[in-house]
Image 1 (cartoon, rainbow, N blue to C red):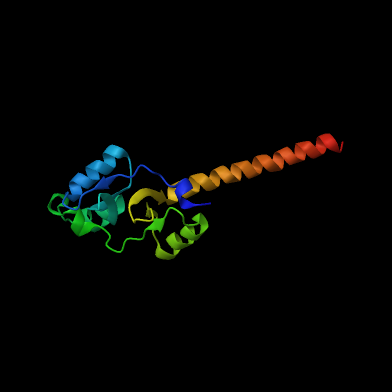
Image 2: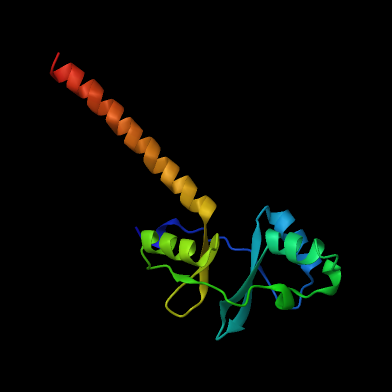
Length: 149
């Protein structure tokens, strides 16, 4: 199971010079909990940071800082964890757990942004797998009942 097969390819991106207020408005507009900050390099969008709704609420608003006065580039997470679209999904889940992050930008071989993987995406996938397994068990019981009355 490769990350590239399960990540969301529609990533909301903002520039470093936007205010936190603008970033929050963009999160609201697109109904997402984060925006990825990218820099253009060789015609590609390379992720350099991320800011989440929790960052805005806990690090700016709760401290009484005016979000209009803070640039996204100053408030973003600088220790950005990215993963390759060719990474194994289970390995990335372990990495996310170890790093304590709920979202990771997904990059290609050129380090260009190609997607984002979130805990919500993983929970959705795993719940689908569990439903499939439950159906398999039920089908097996019905098959056995039919073949071995």
